[in-house]
Length: 82
Length: 154
Image (tube, rainbow over all chains, first blue to last red; front, top):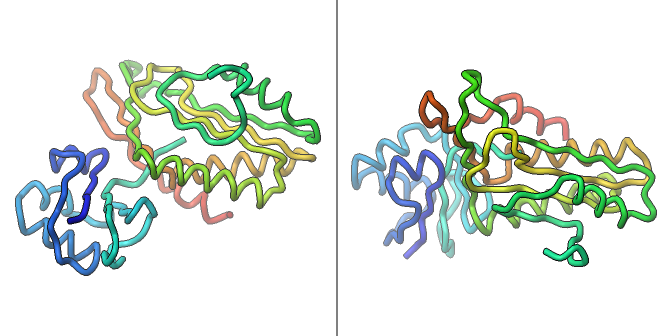
């Protein structure tokens, strides 16, 4: 089981801030494909990956990143702090 | 927080902060510095002039770690005597302070550069997201290409 978190408009499109996902995905990108196959709302949130950022265990990474040993994956739009 | 417990570092908080109090406390603790720079970001109204609230979402846990890492890097890279970052989240009214940075260094060039470095990284790499709620509806603020490319100079 892996914790999957969503923020900002990604959270709004998917409808929950956090969920636990049972997955055998090897990479972040594989997990995205798996989720997109589940329901329309994931398809809507992950339609354009260039508009998304991802973190594994609270470190920014990319969609090729491996999921082995990862406890938490987060998806969100580009950040707008400051 | 009692005045005695106030110290430089990273603070991610919902509560408002007092810019004058923070700047004075930070400055008072810098005995070896010759230059102190402070920057404050405030909630800007929308073009239509009817912003009701700005909602700032963040990623608890990652935010603190990321911002503290940027702060530590700024201190090391610009030989700062100290640096302070305060960033708020939650609903904010127009003109309210969102965040501040303060840097202290022996000379002003490092203090300014350290503050700019921190701002550039906070803008594009700290996990905050702004939503503007106005008479026009609710819109997530889009990241600006200029903010992303500002990182290249470091």
